[in-house]
Length: 154
Image (cartoon, rainbow, N blue to C red; front, side, top):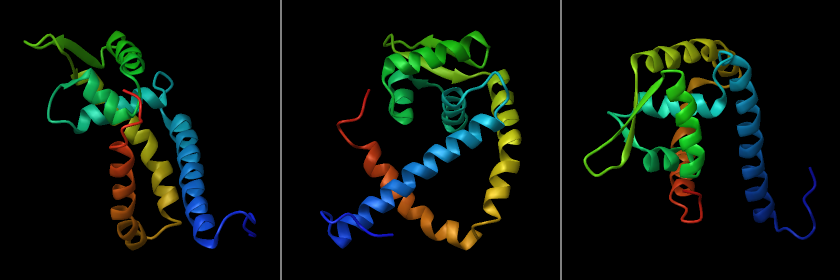
């Protein structure tokens, strides 16, 4: 692949690296959307996944930050999940809305993971476990850096 003439070799490598991450993200989103049960979309699954990994109910703001979306967007997603009985929303003593996973939400998360895992296991056949383990710290550092970006929504 030739590089654009206005980019240095290092700049081109950085650009290609992030372009690949973006392409992987888009392809993974398609894979997840196809695997999810029909009543769940990617934003719903992402919220359920964060709640399933949390130690208890979280504020809308915390959930919005974790999903890298605005509070309005997360309120919409939470509203749809609440309508389905997957989450409960309650105000704490500071009048902050806290979102928690219900038993039905935990079951929906498990069902979604069960539907998704065969696709991920198939993908994992093309990349060795040692390669995944080796790149994981790098991916985590990139995510942490991007998650702390002050220019993000929310």
